[in-house]
Image 1 (cartoon, rainbow, N blue to C red):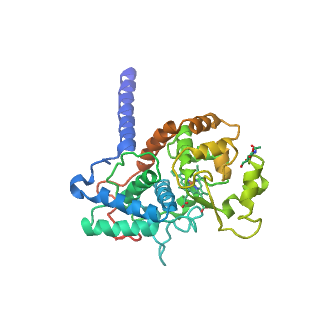
Image 2 (cartoon, rainbow, N blue to C red):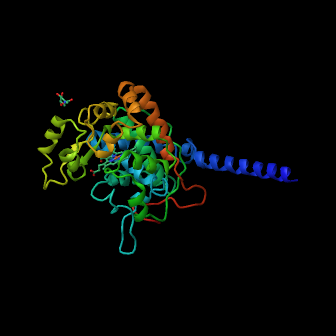
Image 3 (cartoon, rainbow, N blue to C red):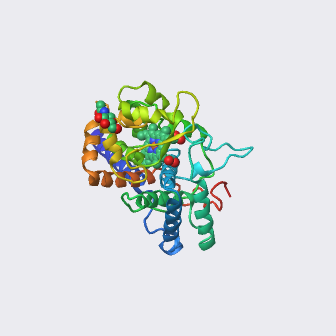
Length: 321
Ligand code: HEM
Ligand SMILES: *[C@@H]1O[C@H](CO)[C@@H](O)[C@H](O)[C@H]1NC(C)=O
């Protein structure tokens, strides 16, 4: 009897574990979600993203980051897009986002196009996921199939935005914990960090690194100081990948090998620790980086989406209906 019930509970355990895994992995999203509901959705988003990136290359980076910051805070539910009101505090003023996230106007433009071709159908969370993929492609990076069918939250979390998004002052061990908490391996974290092959950061974020750290090329540090003085100029920008700032390639990893990471957290990936060998691999094998990045982005997009009757399809990405 004891053996029998043990066996039985084991089976139940295995089955629930299977369900959990299955839900976590797919959660009812599908790549053809809009094929009949809004056939022109994906091509319309792609055109809008391409136009925005042609107009300003950095926009590709900004749109990619928006999706990441959405998904790491209570899942990919467009919570990051909600504006603060007198009675509501969203995520936009949280530390990692304030004076830093951008691209909201591009998402607004896309949303109004969606509402005119298919009112009430295409979620803001899906727009972010597709715009992130199209941005990477527009900058010469890899493509991937975006899973679709996410719905939009009616809530946001200022607290979670402050606690769940990794910060640039972190050492490798804390970065690993932050990504592991979201279900990502060290290898996936290194791949995803390759997003810093494009886009920019503010002086206030990298000032300490260029002035105080030892694992930085001194010529590189000196060149950054001209536009990032020891006081003032907090908002002055420098490219995260100074080699090819608006191309999505593997130069970020070559920079790390040469001690030319811009952020403390960047250089942590190549600082004598467990992730050094993977950084070296990516610095020599762009195709390996491309494939791993694409797979890890699909996984980011699958973080706790709202599906079925949860949440809503916002009419305006900045506010709940
Ligand atoms: C590994 C942990 C990470 C840390 C600590 C981190 C931190 C940062 C910081 C501090 C900035 C500059 C913000 C500013 O100065 O205003 C930045 C920019 C950026 N991050 Fe990350 N990030 C991380 C991972 C990621 C991931 C996983 C992605 C996307 C998959 C990403 C995409 C970007 C992009 C594209 C930019 C440039 C945005 C722009 O120019 O508008 N980051 N990140
Ligand atoms: C630092 O970078 C410069 C070029 O930016 C290079 O000439 C120099 O050799 C590098 N220094 C070291 C110690 O690698």
